[in-house]
Structure formats: C-alpha cells, structure tokens
Amino acid sequence: DFGAILNRLESGNFQLQPRKRITLTIFDPEGKQTHQMHSLNEIYFGAKEAYKASLYEFKLDEQPSFQKQRSSGILISTGSGCTGWINNTVWLAKEDIARVLAHAGVLLNGMELEKLVSDINHNHLFAPTSNYMEVVVREAVAPRPGDSTFHHSWAKQISLRSKGNDMMVVADGLWEQPVGYGGEIHLEAVTSLPCIEFPDLIPSHHPYRLALRDYQSRRE
Image (cartoon, rainbow, N blue to C red; front, side, top):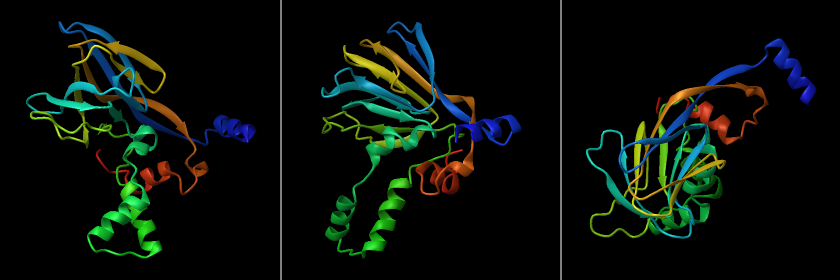
C-alpha cells in the first residue's frame, strides 16, 4: 500500500535507475533552432490528422543521405517506452503467425505456438538505460520509385525532415509542436532521468520485467 511505499522511501529500500530520455531538437528550414525538449517514452512524428498519409524524410545514424517515406507517421521509443505504444504497433497476432507457419508447412502444437508468439513479440524489448532508440514506421504506403521500404530498426541518432504542411511532433502524448515544410528534428537518447524503482513489486510476467531479465544487455 501507499504507506508501505513511503516507509521504503524513508528507509532507502529502493533502486535508482538512470533511464535514458530522448533529446528532441527542432530546426526551421533555415537551420535555426526553435524548440528543444526531452521525452522519456516515445515520439510520434506525422500528420496532425493521423488518417492522412504523412510525407517525410529520415536518416539514421551515419546514413549518407535522407530517405523519403510515406506512411501514417513514425514512432521512436526509448527502452522505457518500448513496452507501450510502439509495442502495440509491432505486435504480431497469434493467428497471423500461425497462418505464415502453415503456409510454410510448419505446424506447431498449442504450447509451442504460444511460446513462439511470446518470443517474437518480446524480442524487440531493450533496456531503459540503453542509448539506442527503437524506430517503427506506421502503416507505410506502398513505395513509389525512390521511396524507402524501411519499417523497423534501432539507432542512436535520428534526423527527420518534414515534407508536408500539416506535420507535427508529439512527445509522450503530452507535448506537441507543429513542424512546417522543410523543418527538421534531431533526436538522441543521451541524457538520463534518475527514477525510483521497486523491482520486487513488478509482476514476473510484466513486459518490463522481461526486458530487464532477458534483454538487459541488448543494444547498450
């Protein structure tokens, strides 16, 4: 209960974990910095009205040039946020996995299929202390000549460039900012936020517990 939590805080019976945050910096088309903020969980970049296709360009890490993309937006997550919105985006339904296996002539019993589904859907989790960010393109439009076919990856540095007039960036579902045509966003997960945690209170089946147990060293 809450009283027990207060007692643990007073006695120092807790852990401090330096969770990485995304530093998000916005530049206008002339290269002048206009905004900067931090996000602990995830960033959405896309059209203000998500049912419209978003046109933007992106570059990951040391890629030599921007790639063009059309989709319903792009999600970028820290290790803290990888169990939230982005997890729902990359989650594969058991029925879809079973259908692909059946098409390949692979038949599994119920327990085998459940384990495979769990392994696949938790495979993207990574530690909250990681400097990496997970990147997922939402509902990509069938690529035209010159368009990127990129869907899902990880990176330490990300650059986004708006190619639309109604684009916006949203951080942690709380802070939003319009990004006009030609505006750029640079993202890095280099700053940390010390967070109080009680690991023994997290259920063993919780995705966060799985991330700590099985993927702590991933993408450090």
